[in-house]
Image (tube, rainbow, N blue to C red; front, side):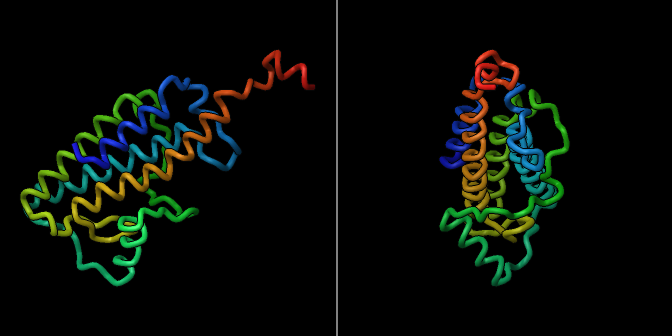
Length: 183
């Protein structure tokens, strides 16, 4: 497996290890995603990439358009520099829609593995320097850029997951006896 995607898979496993379904579903604020929703968002980005590469391979040709100057600038910032800007809205197809958390947790590693296999297959078929499919925000990307994007994007959300984990793992429930002492 690719270095970036292996790191991603390991990091997701590490941050979710031993976390309960109840903790995964807790929201830090009513308008913020829960850890389960963050994981589902990541899962949906992997399934979206898988679908895109399946279409590319079925078509027998790259499906990427010619990159614009703005595509190149966004790719430079995110992929080359490894910086994921805050506050960007998720594309509609990657918004959490209520998939069961146990399904996401059980399948996320396999989705990353499948994604890597398809990226490798397309890269071997069309060449390492070929832009293969379009990212909805960054535009046309090469296989290695897709891998790095998923690492940078995943790392961005893994920081959120780690914050949520530390917040909810050590914070007693409001009706917990320890919390009653402070009332």
